[in-house]
Amino acid sequence: MKLVYSDQYDLNLGEHVFPSVKYKLTKEKLLRDGTARPEDFMEPAPATDADVALVHDRDYIHKLKTGTLSYVEILRLEIPYSPELIRAVWLSAGGSILAGREAIRDGVAANIGGGFHHAFPDHGEGFCVIHDVAIAIRRLQRDGAIGRAMTVDCDVHHGNGTAAIFAHDASVFTFSIHQLRNYPFPKPPSSLDIDLHDGVEDEEYLAELEHGLDKALAKFHPDLIFYLAGADPYREDQLGGLKLSLHGLELRDRMVFEKAHSKKIPVAVTFAGGYARRLEDTIRIHANTIRAGREFAS
Ligand SMILES: [Zn+2]
Image 1: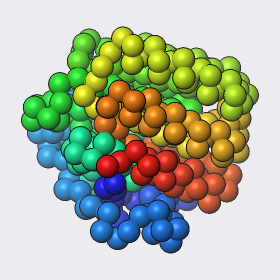
Image 2: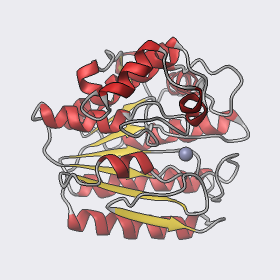
Image 3: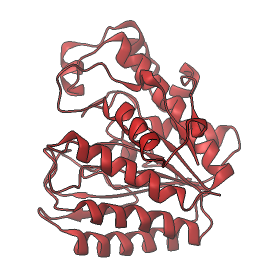
């Protein structure tokens, strides 16, 4: 199983609730635990501006590249702007494109990053600058590598950017399972949304996920699934209000891979959010996702 990673994925945020050092720490843990070997890792090239323009407005891209976002636009991102940030998110988008290609080849692959599902064509918000997964889908479609794609978004927050970007695109099915009473507001409709109440635990979550996946995959057969494996449905998360255990999150990952595998659909993993009180829990959740995915890779 190929794992796409760059040391420059770090978003250069300083002290911030988004621990972007998690990418590096997850890579190190995967190597330390023997889940991955050094040769499993691939270095991405940054997405090209033409790739990014498959999703984002030219004007927004120009502002990002020239550092001319307004004060309000930067506030909405909720992370500090820097040239390193722009470098990181262009690389992350390139990483998701590469992970998609590798998934098509091996059944499963992962970007040790990405999942920036709150980015819209004309603005970023909620720590998400550009939408790496949407860019990857559009690029892989343009290359003829895939026709139809599905996003399976298990981050605790609704995938508002994903829903908006693909609202009128019948070639992409967007599925989001998330906490209802949490950011973002409003939540533009995905192809299928599962709104969970506060405090949902493992058993109910897994039943809802299974129901949703079965429903989505009965309606739509994609050539590739992008799995946004957010670590923030965890009960110790600072920005989430669900109560999944570490084991419940492992069962969640396994369910996504199993359902896709049973229909011979490749899965490209991206990490999305994760704000556990203890950083090592976030790292463990992401590493567990990779370990589960490995069992389904050829
Ligand atoms: Zn999230």
